[in-house]
Image (cartoon, rainbow, N blue to C red):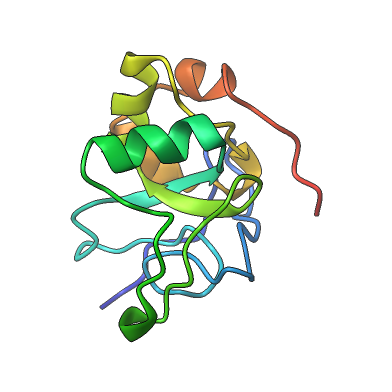
Length: 126
């Protein structure tokens, strides 16, 4: 798998999304992507209780641990690389989580307009 360039939606270098829990398609802590990443796990989002409940409701349980996959489950405040399509769906439903633009991969812009992402922007603590 060949990783796409690590560029964020603002045109700068892609910042770390989360090292704990380790996130991203490559589990490198960044929302890096490649052609094989069909889900486009490219949006660095800060989990909220509302989003996690909605995600479980629509069939993507991000709270329950999946130890066999090395996944300990997420809680509010955790940062996680979401699929761009799932983020857009949450936006349409009125429950999208905050987004760290500096850690959100530029490929996201193929599905989600920058204007929409800016509505949810939080500043990167790094």
